[in-house]
Image (tube, rainbow, N blue to C red; front, side):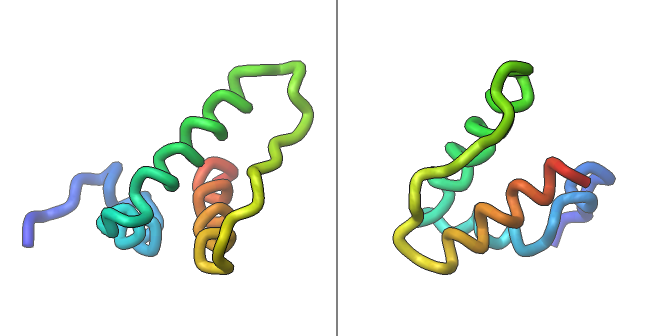
Length: 70
C-alpha cells in the first residue's frame, strides 16, 4: 500500500472508502460540488440535498458536510 500524503491523511477514512465504491462515487462527488457551490454563494443561507434513497447515503452526506465544516 502506498504511503498517504498529508492532505489524504486529513480526509475521513470512511469517505475514502466510500469514494472507492463505484456505485456511490459519482453521488458523493456531486455532493461535494453542491457544497462548494453553496460556499461560493453568499446569498444562499442553507443547503438541502434532495432525499437520498438509503440511510447509508444520508450518512455519507453528513460525513461529506462534516468534512467541510472541520
